[in-house]
Length: 426
Image (spheres, helix red, strand yellow):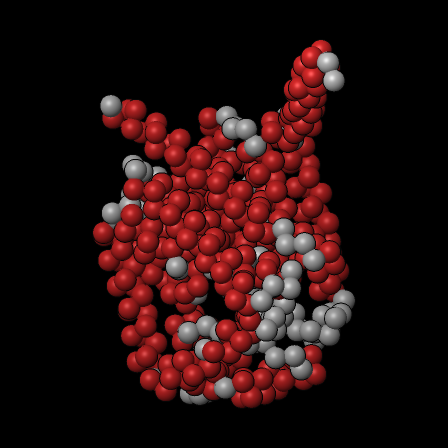
């Protein structure tokens, strides 16, 4: 081979690499900037999604009979667990809530064969305090009141974060809202408590702590809260959260008796069994743990993957909040960290993600969109709509990468805000 031929090879290779890189940049540019996703187009998509959803839900309810939907399940599916737990507690049998046979018998007594598939109650007795009044009214009335009151609380939080009237349509169109309504679940309540803490954190630390403390009813989503408050040196909020949690624990023990707590602790391994043996269904669960199980990984490998995600998110959270000057971004980051850190996460829990999505949108409208921000917002918004069908039919776990992308998006905004605050102080 001649010297001329030898020198031409590397140069042509470099030129090919440059052409490939340029082509890749050209392909990714529409996603990086996403100018095609204008405000008018996004509003139109939300209107279409909301219209289709409302029509489908109305048709589903109209085709139901006696509180049983066309699929033969109770309307609000999971709400039957809450309502019958309330019924047992009002009958002075709160410990029976954690007896699978007794709780299932209460469900079949209300809906017969429609409740043949048991709907478990994995929550600590603290949640019985919330459920207690439900069975004082008929099932359907309780379901409407439950979703209406908790939904209103979340609506007010989101409207406080995202005050632009033009964007109000995006709130009910967010698919996780529909998932929570369909399941009759507590996603609205969970998100409203995170939202209340997020709004109160900069100005009312005690109220923020009380909101965080009330999340003791869903302890798997509280893993990151103490770590975040310690990192941010928010001692008042941390003490208020601890006081609220301990107060609720004591109240539930006094009201329902120690036997109920013993029954809960004895039944708690059932939740772990359901998680590890895929009894709930990994296609319904957007956690890293469930992603590994969906791909037929062992429980040990799934726990290892979840641990890696939790540690990485925890480190990033601590580093970000240690240099913060405070603001809504703290709460947004804590909410996203809470979702990523939990192995036991259902698709309706993605209601919580409405808060960080709303905060980033608020900041972007005020300061301009950063690269990749529009497409990440869009991916986070549509994720609850796609997570279950894509996992169920294609065995592809979309959630962990999308949730991590949203977390990184929020983290970048928080760091920019922190850097700006540092520059002002200097």
